[in-house]
Length: 329
Image 1 (spheres, one colour):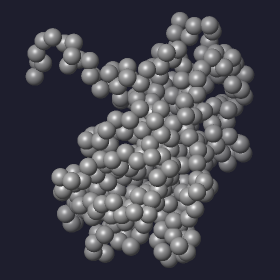
Image 2 (cartoon, rainbow, N blue to C red):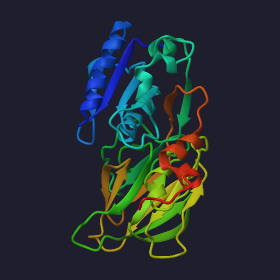
Image 3 (cartoon, one colour):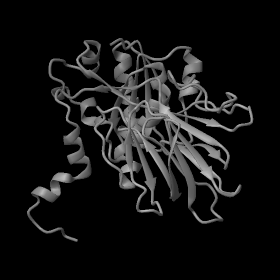
Image 4 (cartoon, one colour):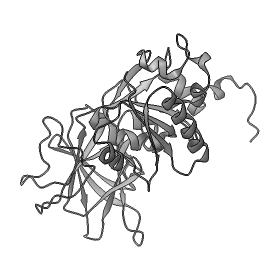
């Protein structure tokens, strides 16, 4: 891997991540890399500015933070096919990140004295993770801004019969629909169409459409299944549905899902992407979600990576099996 240009993205509001970014930038510059350091958070999006400043994408993006910081980087870097290397600095669960110790200890990097030399010698793996894209059909012929990452994936086409659509919104974890207004009951009615066939109408707190990566996020909290990231598939999971027959389903990756808000005109629904606001839908609008054209490229340093070991460690599964003594609670 070439490391001529590296972007260091650190978690907003984390002093630990900021300090680590300074140290890592110094190490990379000592190795001859051109480094740009920027903060990322819900109110700080560094990627458009970095692209405008440099005019071309980097060879590598290093993320110092938690999963949320990784999600923001993936949405912008996947269309450019830039690999992402992530370390858990100031994050919480860290499903998508490496241990920060790898930034300090060469003993964890067999066959190389330095992490960056290991990357230059291609001693790593690249894992491709499915992304989702969403387009909004307003039916008024007025296109709206999205993430600005090009067109729908092959076979997707436009959203509406007249070709009117919002820009493309991307998600690494999930898209979800939640009621938008606080002054009315926090429920909504959503109709789901899969590949042109109406499947169900969900009345409840909302609807999640997740990738395998996102299956351990909001979808899991709402009772959905956990999917191995090596499986390309899409999870459709209702949030607190008011019908016992409304269940989570897993559909093939090339499925085309249409979601309509139904009901009175004041029953607006907000679309979220990876926990960040995307747009607001009104009854009559339609959102079409499908697999994105590009996958996120994640750099893997582990010699023998195990998704199941990650689940066991992050979700504390083994504790209930091996503890052998009662909980202090």
